[in-house]
Image 1 (tube, rainbow, N blue to C red):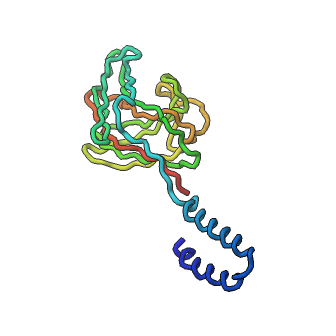
Image 2: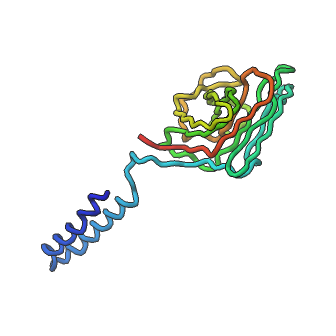
Image 3: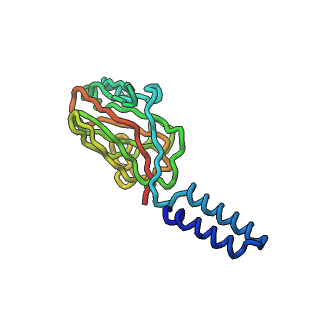
Length: 210
């Protein structure tokens, strides 16, 4: 881009000298100017672009725990200064053992998105990032497990191939995941360890890049 910008004044001057009295030159110069503006305003497709899921209101997130099937696990989600904290108590009693939170995406994801970038701080437990391609609350999800480091922020990147389709903890047949089909996104803890849990996360970035 810098090289094009440097060459443009010389191209313009040479063109004026050769075509000074030619009416067609006015049209040609206009075309050149338009093309230059288009090049500036539309960067190369190889350049990374982002869509960001910001964290503003806790009410945007829904809590779904094992209480829907008779369990007694409990959870809550708070958001403060752009950081969400999903916490609670996991119980294995009464055939329970999971807690989750999720949100619906209000903005469609571009088909060029190839990666989800996530910043999390946890308690050393295993969690799952879960994606859904519909707006139902009880349907299969695409799940990817990740392990946190206690009281330490880490960055994790996910590609579509990192996810497995599951329904109630069991793998199921489903179409290959494409991020532009995502309607819901959330987190789940179900590591069969009773006790308190806490997962903090910052805004999520959906990145397009070659």
